[in-house]
Length: 290
Image (cartoon, rainbow, N blue to C red):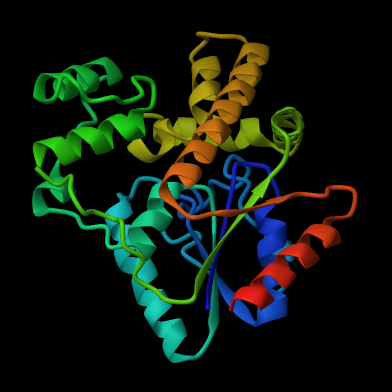
């Protein structure tokens, strides 16, 4: 059995994954694109050793910050782990927030050789959009969503649009989504950012800023890119923190959109007053559908 736990940042996915892993004797595969990097801990809200409660986790802390790691790499690595665990008759839980990673892992998502090698880092969002419109002026794509722009351009330029990633590869896979009312989620995100700052986010960001702030893997990390601007004296600390909150909220909104549009998610409202209620509701659903 494969259980996917999806949802926006800060909703409680990690806590649920541990409880389900204990219940169903499962191992966990991370599908967060930032948590694969060592020492990017506070900014990524990486699961701690204490939080793991002895549950085996895969694809966390496997790369240094300056090593390349793409969705294609994740596809290869995650499928190898799934194959190994299935041979051992282990249940598998995938948990994270990077929708494209889990899509590439579980569906027939194919990459052309050209797509794997191509690099658009030097293009701005506007330049990406202009190239897309030049190829297909009628296409609809979010101008402010760089990941969506990149994926659309890659597909168009490599003629890799049709029948890509629509079929699920693994039987007995359940998709669980955690959700809360939007205002409650945004309040949790704001408080979470304040806690991250209290727990040392500035020091963590400063460490990588001093290492090499221009490394690709660092420039996309929410929490780092805003504080890098503060370290460059472009904005105040308060403005940087406000930006982290704003960008985190926007990211959560994009996560909802991706999971709703790309996967058959079964959504569960989180009861923060008694999280066991949510855990039991999810367990009951799983046991009825496996």
